[in-house]
Image 1 (cartoon, rainbow, N blue to C red):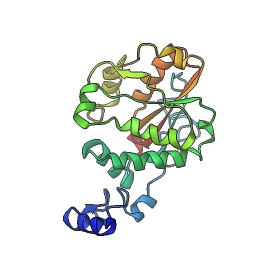
Image 2 (image 1 turned 45 degrees about the horizontal axis):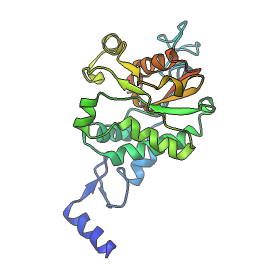
Image 3 (image 1 turned 120 degrees about the vertical axis):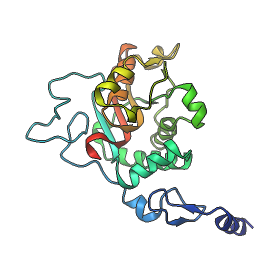
Image 4 (image 1 turned 90 degrees about the horizontal axis):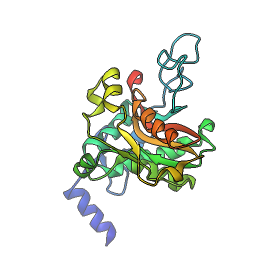
Amino acid sequence: MGTCWDIALDILLPRACAHCRKDLKRSSGPLCLECAASLPAPPEPSCVRCAGRRGGASPFCADCAGKRFSCRLIRAAAAHRGSAASLVHAFKFRGSQLAATAAGRHMAEALALRPELRGFAALTAVPIHPRRERERGYNQAEILAREIAAATGLPLLDVLERTRAAAPSWKLGRVERRAELAGAYALRAGAPVLVAGKRILVIDDVAATGTTLEECAAALRAAGAADTAGYAFARAGSFT
C-alpha cells in the first residue's frame, strides 16, 4: 500500500533535484545521486585560518595575516557553487528542511576529515532573528547542527541569540557586513555557565567573510569559552 501511495504522489506531486532539476523519487533526498556525489570541496590553496582562497607563499590570506580573532579557525564542508549552492538556496529561500538535513549530514561526514576540528566539547548554531525564524519556519543552522550532533554525540547548546534584525548579509559588502553585525549576537540569560571553560564549535550554513562566526565567537569568548572555531556547510566569497 505504501508503495502504491508513493507512486501516486510521484505522479501527482513530482519532485525535482534541487540542482539539475532531474525528476526524483519521493523517498530520495533533495539532490539526485549525481549531484549529491558532486558537491564541490573547498579549493586549495586556502588560508589556514579562514579557509578562504589565498595566493603566494603565505599560509594566510590578506584578511587574516597578522590579526587575532575570537573565532580561531573556520572550515567548511563544501564550496558555495554548483550543487552545494543549489542546496543552500533550497533551504534558505525555498523552505526545504530536507535540503538542510542533507547538508547537515554531509557536514557530519566531512567533519571526520578535519582533524583540526576534533576535541571540541560542544556545538552551537548561529541564531537568526526571531522574526526571520517565524517567516522561514526554522533556523537552518540549527538543523545542520542537529545532524552533526546526532552523528558525533556532541551536545548541542542553545546559548546564542540574535539581538537585532538586519539586512540579509548576502546583500552587504565586507565592510558593511562587519558594521551591520557588530554586537548583533549575545548569550542567552544563564548561558555563560554552560560555555565557561569549554571548546565550542559554532555551526553556520554559509561562511562568506567569516563575520557572523567571528561575532558569535566573540560573544562566547566574552562569556568564558576556552576556545571557539566555526564550521559551515559552504564557503562563499572568494570561492564563487
